[in-house]
Image 1 (cartoon, rainbow, N blue to C red):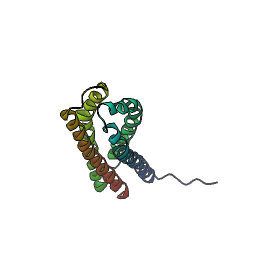
Image 2: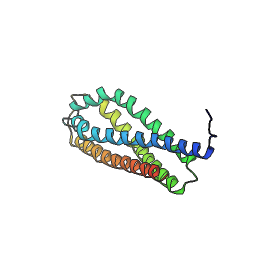
Image 3: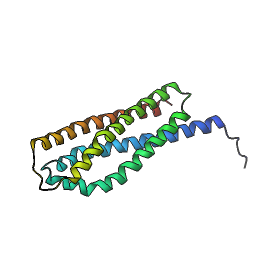
Length: 165
């Protein structure tokens, strides 16, 4: 059986697309999970604060075990894709746009969501339901919508990068 020589350009192009496909799949999983969480879980978290914050406490460990690895897979695969696809201007621009959108979601999470989820989860169940607390929960939901839209844009941009290779 005769083996054909391996074409290094073809091999690199395959790696470009495989690594970028990993980023595409990871980002769409994040979009679907985030949308599900926003529509079905978060309304339960805030239906009767602070008593309903117990749901945040129960879900926080599992959420961390899901979101942290998924985010790392996306970031690592996207950065590797950026390097491997640097010579393809259209893909590079879309990858960069996806990275920027995802970076904004990370900044939003780090500056706002982590602080608030920790505060909500530490709040005593019998704490008073003040107007300020209700305003904080509405603010959370508004910013979650912004974060979800940024994730959607990141998913669209990384998909466009993949389809333009």
